[in-house]
Image: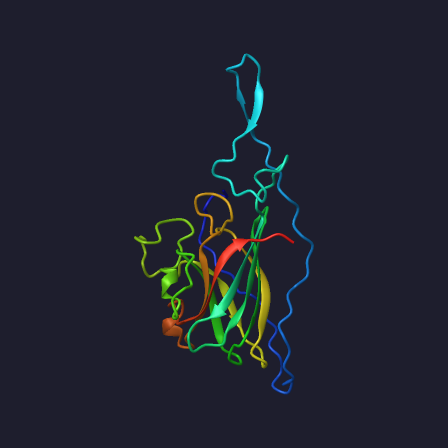
Length: 220
């Protein structure tokens, strides 16, 4: 797991169409080559029989296919967010483990023209409640989520986005702390799309939960 050096939040750049461009369109996802698989090769040895017999110790690692002859680490994940009760926002968040951080690609629809939103990871991978409350509090990437030292910090923040004239938003960026592997893995947790306030005094405050999706393992 990468060392937690600092909390980071990115702005997911979104193209905002001009007021005259009112033709609706579905959000398009960026097409990029698949990141290379990371081989899992740290064998352990058992000398009980008098000879070194290599075995794989897979404890603590998320593997794409643990039973494969040469298993590879999970390097990609995805969350498909569905609207909470009374909302229309929906979309996908794709996550790719890179050597210098976690790459994030988003594509959303059903948003309000020019409205701003935040994307956050939450502790529980549970989107069963109508209002998204079952996902629990935001997830802390380098400390306690349930008893944080700074309860006012904007934990779990993956970035911000803004809707275009058609109510769509797409973009990509990179964050340092979130990880797919290790004790602070976000796989199995939830991603929630939050509304934000235009009031600068409320910047960073968690807004209403508009859509929710569980983070699962992905491979293309």
